[in-house]
Length: 328
Image (cartoon, rainbow, N blue to C red; front, side, top):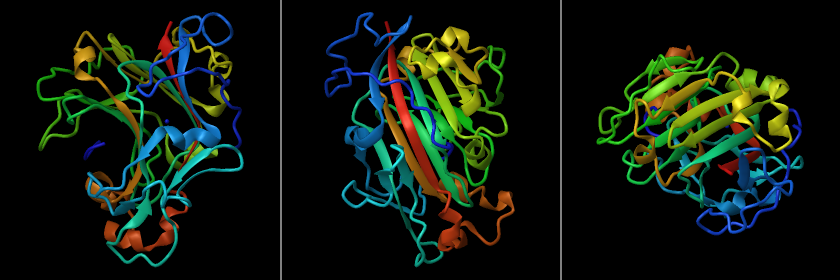
């Protein structure tokens, strides 16, 4: 994530067993024994008590200049945990005693595995929101932006709509084609990013896809399909999750028009996006939420917001599962 840089107790996605190595590669690709769909087999499933075992905790200064102190796993006990429902929770410290312009404790984690393709299905009960809050779930390659970045979930403050953004390196010619078959509202078409130009190409989802209304609707799933021909996004509210996803046999051909899509007609996807890790974090203020804070009609400044612990009562993400499938 750069400057602009997926509910009620939910029905879990189906469980699977698969041996994988440390590079995220399947050592026992499945056959038709119940662990495959018509098209996809499951490579990774992050969920439950072992969720955090396959993630690294980042504890350096926030690259987006937010008012957060990211915690190591050892120091993150009340900020990164699995709750009694089996949901993995990441949150911002909502206790008092932080001065205006100070730093609140938070977490940023990245997957140990790296990916060069996949069908990513992430099921959430809750997404973070509040004045100054900036949550993100994204994928990023090496040597930003040369390895690419895909923001799967990203918005700020009390926004009600999610934004999908793609960033590519200086040598990649990638443009979002507004004429492609997707339903979201495109915000920018040039994906190339770098110093002084970090907007990327973006698509805005519909009202209710983020923040308080997303949570009130019971959460839902965000999906990214990434292969050499496309990076495509769908989102389904809790009541609309397709049965094939619930059953663990995903069939993208049946999901209808996506929210956003980048195709190989306007981008060399295979070279622009590579060796990507998944990242989940919540920052506050910083390059985007801080600069846009006064546009939200909030009192004072973003620095003032940091001191009010009640702004962070809803600054949490609750993940039911993240499943990564590969093509059969």
